[in-house]
Length: 179
Image (cartoon, rainbow, N blue to C red):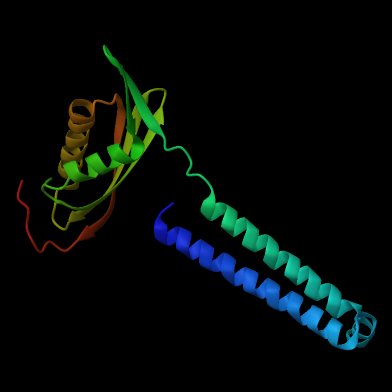
């Protein structure tokens, strides 16, 4: 979890704690001022019960949010390969970033988003691409598949199952990249 995400969660938790204190404070201050019995009779049981339930909900939400923000990060998935000298673990995130960078100069490709799934020691790479208008989609898709396959096998060193290319958009071709 990133720092700004933790900050947002903690801010929400603090907000819930403030609401809890205010809810309990209203009940307690009225109770001390008028005495607990007079307060309950004056306001009715429904108001008191509703305020207490609301306080419990706010407190539970605050505790949950604080627990989430302080919780340990889940172990990131890694692809393991064995070598003569031992084991090499490559994180899925590292493979995704490497694939994305490798496609930066492929002619016809404007933007990419990658996903990597590991199954039985092999990876499937899914690449969502936006291509420049006028690009030959089958040709550019094959270049993307070839580049990813070469990069994952030779550079990253991870066994590849398949490369799936999804053309998700076409964009105006401002800086023409020629093949």
